[in-house]
Image (cartoon, rainbow, N blue to C red; front, side, top):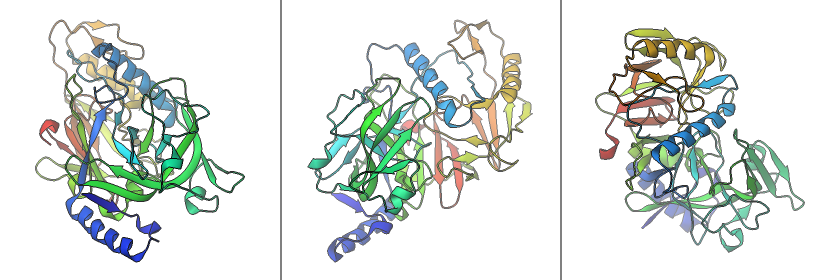
Length: 412
């Protein structure tokens, strides 16, 4: 069975399909749904390399974090607190989706800091070296180019008009990777963790004919979960009421995946839940939170950076695609000093970019680190997506909140 979701702004099908959509919209609202969130280095991922060690994967994840700095602010620096036993090494997550009619399977990277959904397409002038076949839009009965006059084209940054009046997009990422191609409507189907599947009709996608970047990895595309109009969250619309959540498992050699939840499945409730306002600044894409202070053990360090906005109006971005937290250099110096004075162990030279590393041959105690957001204190082991391990994190776009709940994600 397939639940069909038709975005309200695009309803112009015949009455029988409209009736079907209205019924299935109600079903989606009342039940919600969840999909697999696949760690980049999982055996289920097209990026998986069985020859890499855990150390290799951690190092590669750090490099990807460096490349993500540019999307936020060039003065941010990388931070990390080493543990005696490193068990997590993935920098991004992926999910299984199908595009077109008949369905064409692909595994794009999930990105909460961008909006556009795109995949590599035939004919391809230049493409990343993905293992799976390229999507051929000519084989899809539901694929339809978007005109230059359409609002979807006008609302997307960096578009041009082709000779046949179709909209062409161009998107660039901080690591200098990019995608250029046609903007189009098509159907996307999400493989849920329990049946039925969920199909979203007439969703805006990018069909990339010229894609690349500094790394020639196996990236087939990106699925944007940002706050902009063309993200998956915004395009699904009312059936999920602006709600999504995730609970990240520690990465291991096991064939395990985390979950990405939508709609009623994404509600975070119960004992231990804390919530903080979700703040929208100049870019609707990014999910800004307001961080007031950081505690290392009993030492509280006030966070006064206002480079992203006015005091109390959003100064940190929560991003699923970044492995480590990025801080301005001033507060990072205070933070590193506070952590170092509370760890009784031998410091060693770490990977490039990490200045606070310790010899793991002897056991030592890591101080508790707590992020004091407005209205929400969140105790961490690490931060970035590493710190989000075993925390259920829920976004409610309509209520403008982000909620946190300590959770055993293997049981979620």
